Length: 494
Image 1: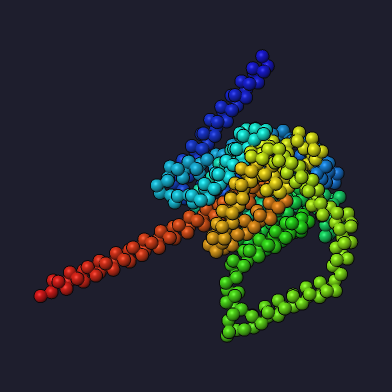
Image 2: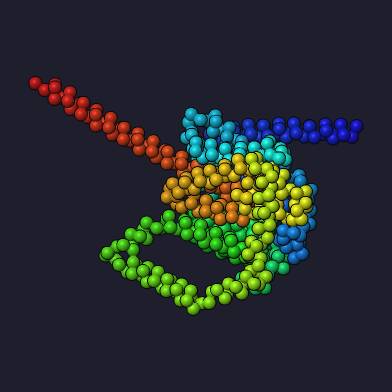
């Protein structure tokens, strides 16, 4: 009897949720029918709010439970988080679904979605999510797997105006997320600070994790927020300077070397694309040779310093001493990731075509290998290879190549942002899984921003080409009409 009542309640809840989603989507379509943009920019606030709420109410103590692959972290999922999670998922589906439905209804008026980006994304999801979920060694289906597909398709359907709204929203949401973590330092220091961290470049300074899952994740989010700020600064200069101070402080206190390196490399991508052509023109300007002379002198000084370091720095002895230390041994083993990669490789060998399935690295699997915190393979290719097999790994490589080509193609049009976001994803993929599409979380933010930026740049390029062709046809038609009128006038003369 109790089981029947429980099933009836669950079925009723599912029906009500479906009706609510349908009603919400219909209402959203009506609201945005006469607008030039939807509400896709809101998803960044929603996703980061869910992350902040989950970690704020988790009851974690970073002074006791540092980030480790072999020691389990005791976290409690608050009842409020359990209630908010499905509501947030419903909100994301409504927002993304509205964009898809609206674009379909207005398909005759709106610019069509870039086919290469859309087809490649759907193929990537099908090969890395749908195929292992249905055909893997351990098949498993979940509604969470559909969310990234819907959000990704909606991101590809946005316009240039919606891209600008999304970049500003991502910038604001990330800055608010970082500020909230800093404000909690005097209130709940053990929640946001890892005081046991001793491997950073700031001796005695606790490592800041803020409201992210851990400090490395906060460093990545800070890096992304600064990139959005660099691409879309505030209208008021003092607010931009304050945001830079906040972002750089969080990036520094997170003490993530990979995030530091990624931020420098991605910022250089933006600056090279934006300032590179003008810089080379100044260097080669014969009327003002001082820029070229200074650049040459700086380059020669750098090469000389490197040569002196290699000849007299005793690098071989220093490297041997470093790798003999505990920190060096940990680095040589890539902080234990070599063990995870070995396990992932063995799982692929057992299931080479479609992989283990989506449940790889779940709680039971982690317990069986003695790594309770190894929630993924800590490398995008190895994780996809083991989880989705050769089919998924092949799709990953093809998808990455397409994203790279398009990022380079539209780098100038986007002010270097497409290239910077791709580089951020590529660097992150070396040790994490930013392209995992089995659910939504903070890792999805960079991926979605890249899709939005590429799609908007492709649409703008298509519109520019069409406008150019129409202008050329108009000029040709006007010239033909003028010539025809002139010929007619000549014939009409006596």
